[in-house]
Image 1 (cartoon, rainbow, N blue to C red):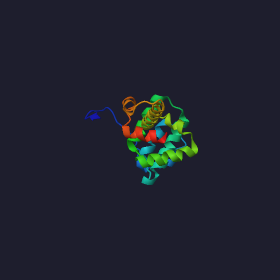
Image 2 (tube, rainbow, N blue to C red):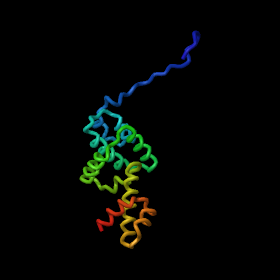
Image 3 (tube, rainbow, N blue to C red):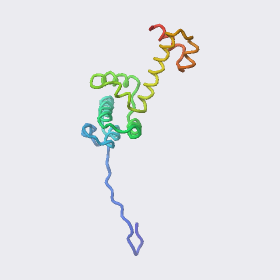
Image 4 (spheres, rainbow, N blue to C red):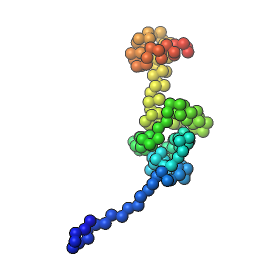
Length: 154
């Protein structure tokens, strides 16, 4: 920024092209920004599950407070989302290297999965007590069809 008679301000900045960065170079880092940006880095489509798995590993290793976890996780999921099938594959792989409950403590999409599991557990207990399907559906917000499946499992 300048006038013909006076130079006032100059901005100098470096650009960072995340797509050109290899995500594997950052998975050993305990830097929350590296974890958040992992999903915006260069990876192949078939590596999506691996990227998210390494991200989850980083998140559990860093032991951040819940507010920071939410921020980082929501940024990550903005750029990398998995289909239901990919999520299932991820959960199967996660069970091999860490406790699934540890992952369920992470926020955002896993919170919803945890809530759904909790609803089913409540519905099962209510079925054991002899509650009606209508009442269970009203309390848990599960469909009658889902409750029927749980009843068959008992």
